[in-house]
Amino acid sequence: MSIADSRLQFERPIADFDERIARLEAGAEGSPEAREQVRALRRQRNELVRQVYENLEPWETVQVARHPERPKTSDYIDLVFDDFVELHGDRFFGDDRAIRTGFAKLDEQRVMVVGHEKGNDYKQRIACNYGSAHPEGYRKAMAKMRLAAKYGVPIICLIDTPGAFPGIGAEERGQATVIAENMFEMSRLATPIVCIVIGEGGSGGALGIGVGDRVAMLEHSYYSVISPEGCAGILWKSGAYAEQAAKALRFTSKDLPDFGVVDDVIAEPLGGAHRDHHQMAASMHQYLVRAFRTLLRQPIDELLEARYEKFRQMGKYLERLEEEETATTAGQ
Amino acid sequence: METTNESASATSSETTPKFRPKRGVPEGLWRRCPGCRQTIFRKEAERQLGVCPECDYHWYVSARDRISQLLDEGTFEERFTELRPIDPLGFADRKAYAERLKEEQARTGLIDAAITGTGMIRARRVAFGVTDSAFIMGSMGSVVGEKLARLIELATEQQLPLIIVSGSGGGARMHEGILSLMQMAKVSAALARYHEAKGLFISVLTNPTMGGVAASFASLGDIILAEPKALIGFAGPRVIKAAMRIELPKGFQTSEFLLEHGFIDRVVRRRDLKSEIARLIDYCGM
Image 1: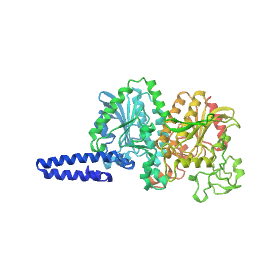
Image 2: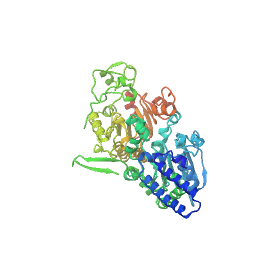
Image 3: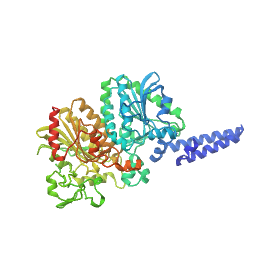
Image 4: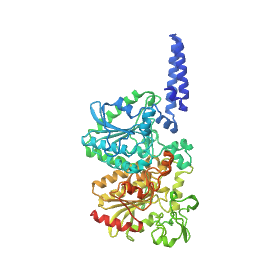
C-alpha cells in the first residue's frame, strides 16, 4: 500500500510516519519502552491521517477518488453482497465490461446490482476501459434494471466512471441516446433505486445510471458536470489548470448535499476507503439496509412521485414576479 | 418582449478563426458563408431563412428568428420569462460567471439560452422551446432546464404537441456545476411523464447539438428531425480526437451520420421544417 500511497503528494508525511513506526517495531524486540513509543507514534500518525483527510483540497479528493487501490464495484460485490449472479447480455451489440450487472443478496433481500467497473489490475483496466462505458454498457444496465423492476427487485447503482467513453464506435452506437433513454426510463421505473457514487461521478456517464430514490456518495468521491481536466481545457484553455477547475466546480461531498443533489454522504474509514475495504463495505452495507427499510415500505406511486419531485426541484435560479418587482430564490 | 439584433453568424465550431464573425455585431450587406467561403449578399440569404443560396449551408439563426420562421406570425406567447440565471457556485474561471452572464445578456438580448412558450404551427397549437447557441454556447444550466421542464409540464396539462429546437454546442453548462448536470435528469423525467400522457414530442436538432443536451431531451423525441450537416453528438470531436489519437472520418457526427446510424428520423431542410412538423402532428392526431 505504501508504494501506491506515495504517489499522492499529500500522503507523503503519512508514509514517512508509517516507515518510522515500522523501523521502531522491527527494532523494538519486546522492550516495554519501545512498545509504548510505537503506540504513541501510532496515535500521532492517526491524528495526522485524520487531519490530512478532513482537509483535502478538491483536487486531492479527485486523487483519492481515482486511487488505484480504492475499492471498485467488483470489491463491493464480494464484500457487501452474497450469491452474485452476473448477467451480461445487452441483447444488442456486445458485453461492455465497464458496467457489471447481476442479481445479488443484501442479507436476505434480493437486489439488482449495477455498477461501473474500473478493474483492479492493468489487464482488467484495459478490458473495461478504466470504467468508461460504451452504449452497450448503458443498454445492458437498463435491460437488467427493467428485468429487476418486472419482478419487484430493488436496484443498487454504484457509480464510478471518469465519463462515458468518447470514441467513434460510441458515437456510432448512440452514446447520447442511451444516456438520455436511461434517465427517462429510470425516472419511472417501478422499483426502489439507490445510487451511490463510490469514486468518480463523471458527468453524463455517471447520470446514465444515476437517477434514483436516494443518491448518496462516499466521503472522498466526487460528482461533477465535467472532469476538472476537461473543464480547465475549455475554460482556462489548458488542462494544467485542473486544480483551479476542481475548486471552482464544487463537486465534493462537502458541497453537494447543500445543492440538494446528494441525499447522504457515507463516511469513509480513517484515511480513505483504499485503506480499509472491509470497513468501507460494512458502512455501505449498513447504509443500504437502512435505505431499503424505508423505501421498500413506500407504495410505488408515492415512491415515483417523490422521485420525480426530487429531481424536479434541482436547480437554482431567481424567479422575478413581474408585477411585484421582487426577487425570491426558488428551487433547491 | 425583448428583441435581438443577432445577425446570422455561424457558430465557432464551423468557422476558422480567420473568418470568424463577431457574434452579435451587426454586419454589412455581405457575409462570407462558412460552408463554401463565398461572399453572399445578406438579403438573399435572409430570404432563404439563413441558408446559403450557393451551397445550401444552414447558417446560425437566433432563437427569435427561429420562432418567426416556424410559428405562425404573431401567435407566439412567451412563457416563464420570470426565470433568471444566478451564480450558485460563485464560479469564476478567467472571468466570473456572474460577469459572463451580464455580458451574454447584453450581447444577445436574451436572459438565458432558451426561449419557451406557446404558439401555432399552421394553425395547430403547440408548446414551443428553442435554445440559442449564441448564449454561452446554448448550454443548459438551471434556467434552461427549468424553462424546458415547465414547458413540458404545460404541454402535458394542456395536451399540446411539444416542439423543441436545439442549438446547444455547450451541453450542460459547466459554470453551474452539478446543478447543470441534474437538469438533464429533470427534463428527461418530465418528458417521461409527458410520454405516459401520450404526448407528441418532435425534437429538432440544429447545428450544434452536443454533450448534455444531446444526451437528454434532444435525443428523446418521439420523432427526431435534424437540419442538414448539423454537428450532433455526445463527446466533442476534439475530445475524441485527443482520446483516440486518430483522424475522424469525414462527415462524423453530422445529421447525415446520425441518420445513417439510425438515431434520427429525417434530415429536413430549413425551408421545409414548418410544413414537415405540421404534417407529422397531423399523422399523430394531436
